[in-house]
Image (cartoon, rainbow, N blue to C red):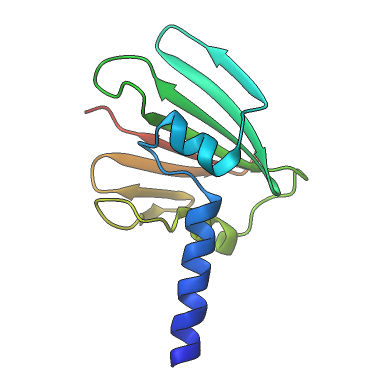
Length: 134
């Protein structure tokens, strides 16, 4: 029993280190991943791309007042282009969100309450997470 809890705790810690949260700031992203490999400033958001371990992580940080400075969109893709397994997707979605855990919406879709949705795009082999409009 103790080993199972220790393993689960280690996996949870690894995932939290691996993956940014929606609502993260640019400072938190740099702390996790270092400098972005690409930055594109747009009217309503700044798109940043990071290559970190075996993933390419692209985030959009809002430039408008409601979410200003917060991550509102994130996509995660394997660098090797291989599809993600359901176990890998589940581990990427397990994070310490302030409002609870991701719940399955059926198929390759998940949600956290009414404020965030996630979907695995099998065609593009990408996990997409985004905030719903407030």
